[in-house]
Length: 85
Image 1 (cartoon, rainbow, N blue to C red):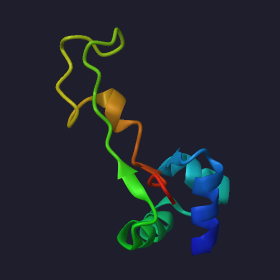
Image 2: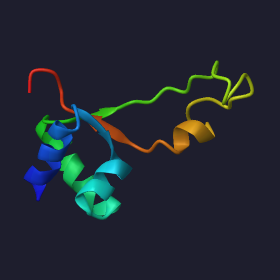
Image 3: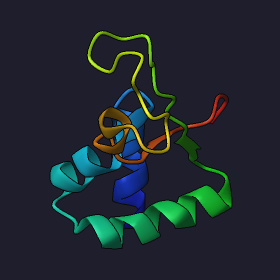
């Protein structure tokens, strides 16, 4: 099962959202989170950090920042294969 997670990430051009990966592999999101953390610990994948683009028309200047922005909150965690792997 762990190999399927890594294979799916590699097949997705190197990065994927946790929710999308959960749906694609038909694995519970919380169980998948543990599998992802296994690969992060091994150094085979890296978490992606999202930054809120407060200049966008959708968010605007009233954005509360990345920690509380509703647009960033809906994205969920995402992961990528490090360069050279």
